Length: 183
Image 1 (cartoon, rainbow, N blue to C red):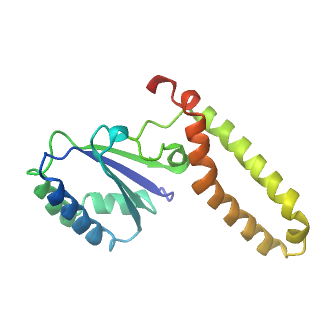
Image 2: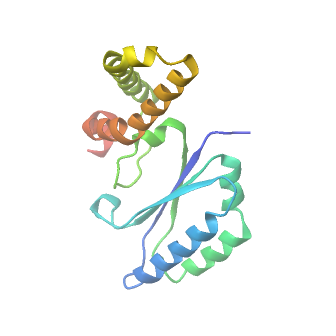
Image 3: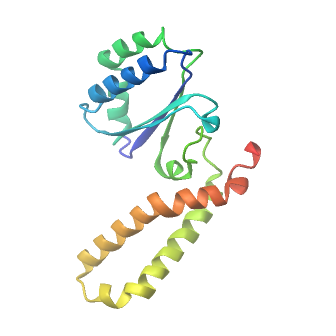
């Protein structure tokens, strides 16, 4: 059984004039989906030039099993019936797991993950710089803590900085190298 988090990216074009109804539909389905085991969050990216005019929903579950249970549920199926009147064209789905979610360009249509070697190079450089900097500035203070506390603090700070600060910026800065075919 796969136990890593999974993010499903859903792209939909909404018929002109039906946006308010769609937004109401999104609020309702999020409320129901949030009660499902393993549900973590939903981000809504509204239509923009970066999404080619589509709404994007990024739905996160803690495991593929929980995500699949929601995807195949009768409750979700009932919600999808309502969409027939609101959407224009096909709905696009993509499920991603693991580190490739760090390489998503914020506010833009999802792209296929970059080459794994490129992801590894960026992560190694980012983690090295982060660990070195933290140890340089806070090594003496961290050395005073017991090993478990020190490790917990380092892991929390590093993951938070990588997720919310470093990787979004690195992905933007290195976009042409990561995604050469989209230029």
